[in-house]
Image (tube, rainbow, N blue to C red):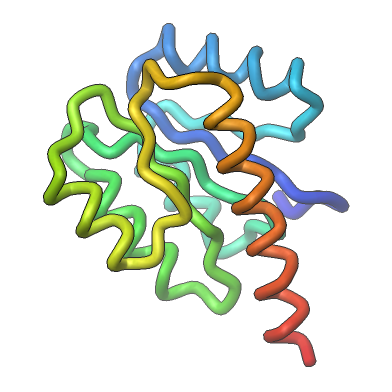
Length: 133
């Protein structure tokens, strides 16, 4: 599933939110792969290329934190932007302590999300270059 350029991997179990966010990110000019379950994403995790992960925090079964732990074990881990509809302060602290790029509310501003994505993509490019040298 590796792409020539960076890919935004979007994981959210809410079908309507996943569809809306997919359309928004594609309209903003991003290459995107969307997953309706964390299990689907984890199946392709070993084959991903550059990019970032926009990840719902609260999903049934495998949580956003479980995915974050799996991503961290990869040779080239992706920066993660967590999205949540009802995050607690302790969730944000945990996510950031474990390396998340950002922790945003699902109903926050589009500009804030796009800025976080650009920051995450730049971080991924820097880290990949550093690991290759």
